[in-house]
Image (cartoon, one colour):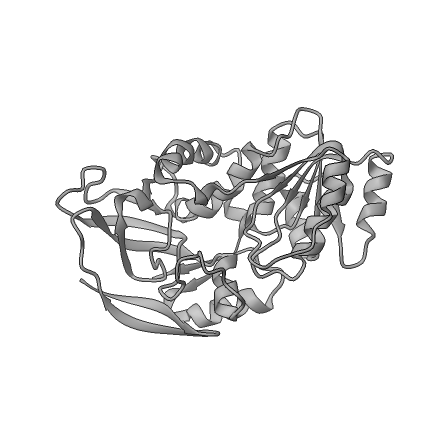
Length: 325
């Protein structure tokens, strides 16, 4: 089949081409309902350093979903007509895309496809919540209110945090965090966060911090160290995003104050791990416990992908931008 797709051919250079998709016997062919731009896509598009152990971003797009329209002769897991969520580098910036069966998971019954097509980034955020270590009555802090950070604000509150403190550089992000259940919002652009946390916790520090500022963001190092600095003795620091360039971190404080650090890398386990965890992570979304729809800040057609990427790059208030064929 011929499919119109988007490729990343150079720094800030996206091209639309026609590509022949030949289905292997263990693959499925999907008609795209929706794709979305990840922070990693923005980093690659910007020409920033990409670690050598990552797959190529030339055929860009790993978030998305759609409907199965053809299956390989050995495929038993899916049938034509199934709605699926993509989990992997499948060139979802395309009218059609294909991949091995272990790169897909069926959409939970009854879930809106606009939300289901955000399954991959949603599960990344939810996995961070599930493994944050937050306990009933804790004070938790989220540093970085990207898509996953805003999911974390909701999830940490639902899991029993008495108080959730949301930290970011965008007032728009912070207002969204407030709507998502944050008890306190703090802006690093003009507030002394460490001083505020000392006041809020009577000098004790917070129980759990969740760092969600990485990929392209120049504040990655500052926010990572902020989490370390404001966490209490024997508290938990957890980090969600891929930090794709080296940073300097205050490891002495982590060690000397007996903190636990967790890197919750859902997408860097094997396919069996995803099969086990994704249904569990999507359940709160299906049940309406976590609001994903309000985190969508812009929608573009696939033909407007250049405009969409520019918007994400230039507008610091964006959270999640959708692309639709």
